Image (cartoon, rainbow, N blue to C red):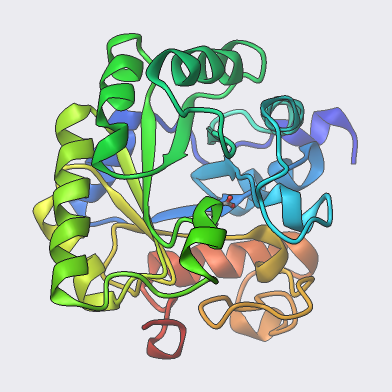
Length: 280
Ligand code: KIV
């Protein structure tokens, strides 16, 4: 693939925060993926993916660590630059790594680096109401924010494993309170990871901001998966993932990687993914 391959732009116009909000209002599911490099970012745009997250999952799928914790701000900047060069209209979101936003000024500084040096158009951060002051400060400074609730992998050692969150009434109420506080502070988007489908559907219904799920059922305003899970690269994929490459072109779309990504987009748009077996 050469750099000119990146210019095919099926989205027609840039995906913006306003466009995501309009998609939610229109009931059009938002198709999102993670991306870490130029070539797969370009392939994702050709397939019609609207949002690419340069996730700290890169620590596991690119760098080979056991958790996302070792990932640095410089790592995310490097990969965000690679991804940005591959796309024209896709909205690129950069993850704030573990310990990069433990205080408001530190978070503002690091988010600014992701935008200025990496070229990110939005930042994502794990955390609940305790992050509201940072979200407000980012928002005031023109930095769009994607919040992340449910399973927060940066807290894996506190949680004792990668487990579904929001199973009890108390956890449901706490998650809704967190989501409302983050929205009130200015968050533009929310990712819900490993959350029971009824809770995720409820949150998508009561929140103004679009809600994108991963292991959160089909009632969200959009879906996101880790690229390596969609392409069947992951040795032990999570239950909520699906390998769109090995299902072959009989599932629609073209052949190869772009065909697999197209099948993912079409399945999300048609609300055929996630199916009940991918949900909790
Ligand atoms: O880091 C990541 O890739 C993520 C997604 C799984 C949502 O946070």
